[in-house]
Image (tube, rainbow, N blue to C red; front, side):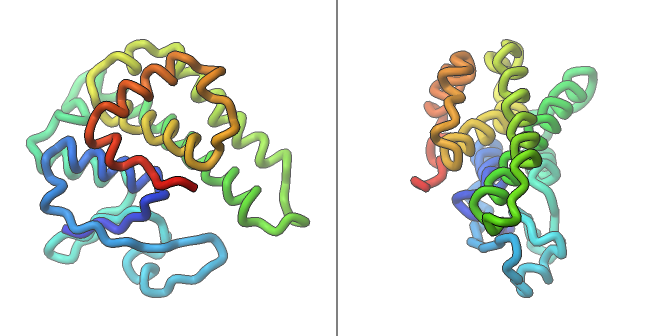
Length: 204
């Protein structure tokens, strides 16, 4: 299998962590890819018209899109139930938590594009602030979710690791640690896991 990725992508990081945790990483070839707003990449568009990272290319050529779907595929390939509960109320709670975290990452990425990529004269500050407030409110919610912070290592915890790691990577001065000390303690504990530590993005 091949995984398209960038070390800077929190979505690709999620899959890398999952691949390590499920014991499948050695069977996956990491294939660097570059995608950016406003910059065509015709070769990558042939793989996915959405031009998003990551995608998993199976040995038979099939393409699996979306970081969550890829994690679900890897979890099932590894026997199921390790990162995503197989059934019952816990499954839906974990999936819903992950959806919130995925949306937070989407908003943070849009903030990054608005401030760093969009030409200055075209920036929409209110739109940027609205998306940042969504991510920040999400952090505040997880600050008060001991079931997630101290629960079993699953897709929700992986998603939260990727949110906080991306905040460090792209928004180093946002002050999330001071505002959310429980998240800080959670993040420090997670960094003790080899899968989390090895996938930290390089210095911005």
